[in-house]
Every structure is written in C-alpha cells, then in structure tokens.
Length: 343
Image (cartoon, rainbow, N blue to C red):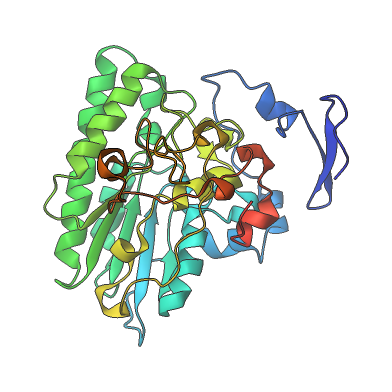
C-alpha cells in the first residue's frame, strides 16, 4: 500500500487491482456517492468467476436447496438477503462468515443459503418448498431496505412497515412449525442504511421492538446497536460499501452484536470460553465516566447502567477496554478483520 501524503489519494492493491483511496481510506466512487444514491450494481458473471473458491463461492450457493438430510453433528442455517451472504465485505467474509468461524469452537457447521436482493415475499414463497427441520439453529436475516423503505415517503412508509412486519411474522411462524422443539430460531433485526431518514429510523426501531415480542423467536440480534449504527440509522463512516451494504469493517461490527451463546445449538455444550474481539468505532471511543477503564458504548456516559449506579458491571456491559478500540473504522484492514485480530 502506498503512503497518503497531506491527504492525497493513496494507492492500494486489492486482489491485483490498483485502487486509489482518499484521505479517509475510501475509494472515489464511494467517497463521492451522495446520500440516497442507489447501491452498486451486483457482481458480473466475470467477477463471480474470479471469486470462485473464496468465501464468495461458499456463501452464495443460492440456487441450491436447503439440505434436508440428517447429519451426525450440529448445524446452523443462515438464510436471508445479501448482507447475510457477506455482500460488501472482501471475499464475502461477512458477519455470517465470522459466525461460522466462531461456531467451529463447538463443532457446529454453518450452512448459508442467503440470496441477494430477496424480500419477505421471496422467503414466504421459498419456504413453502423447503425443509429446515434437520437444523439445530436457524438464523433468518432480512432487510427493511429490500422492501423499499429507504426510497419511501409519506403513507408509503407505514405501508412498507406493516408489509414487512406481517411478512416476517409469517416466515417466523413457518420456520417454527418446521423446526424441532429443541431447535433455536434466531432473527436478525433491521440494520442501518445510508439512505434512511429520521422517519425511516423510527420505523426500523418499531420493527425491532415488535420482533422481540414474537413468541416463536428465541433471540433477536440487535444490529442497531451503537457499534453498528451511528445514531441516525446510517453505517459508521468508513464502515460501508454502499447505502445498503457494510464493508469488511461494518460486517465485523455487525458480528459484535451477536451473543454467540444465544445462537449456538442447545446441544453444543457450555458457553464460549473466549469473548469476541471488540471493534468499536472511533466516535464511541470515550472513557467511562467512572474511570473504570472501559469505553462508553450504549450508555450515554458510562460503560453500563450498573457502573453508573454503583461502580459494578452488569450483564449488558460490553466491557470494551479503551485500548481495544480501533483508531478509526477505516483503519481496520480487511486482512486483520478476516483473521479476527484486534486493530
């Protein structure tokens, strides 16, 4: 990688192709993209061929049916739209790939059948012809953006909200009916979009809270936590590829939102022995007001409510040490993130 002098673009090699990044570490087409601009075009057949054998090849077998044969080990199924397949991350190593790597600790196989650009209508139709009963955990992750929320205004916003909630609830009920009583059903909550307005953010927040009330669901992943959401419903600076997709940094931030013990199959043994590496945006890199050494995350002034009250650390405390906070989202390299290392 070439050096950036006085904020000038620097040269970086990405899979043999020269890319010129601006002073923020963003390619020109991303840096110049205005708010509300449409996502980048899907990869061409030539690009897919070039990525063969990578995580792209493993996580985008969308035309294949969901496996129905029994296995002699625990399996976790990920289904959903493009972000669930790793779209936006280098070599498609997205949050679901990080999840797959983590599940190896418990000898749990992760199978991904996400399909880019899909909606609640698509999955309601597809699940009528699929069988997920052989999985010990199913994770379903869709996007309000694929329903057209980021482009909606006026009465259309409420229409999309109700359509998404009703469609996702029907999907949830279909999955629960298929799964064994001992299987876990996990939903990925809504996630940021660079085109969202304050009205869209309110919809996303209502959708998330509604999902948490459904009796069929064991756990809802909150992808709107501060580590992912900049507070306005957008990705953090340097953590996105386009409005609808995070880049490698953004995907890793999404992975930080997942409680692995709430996703792993019940039969896979006790909890995980090591905590996930934290990668917190620089905008959150301020110390807890108590001086405990942890960073402020979801609480306004402290690392958690318990610390603010009496100096202890409650179960919601993320316990992110200041020296684990990355200097900037754009400073985290793809290679380091894929290796799961601390930036």
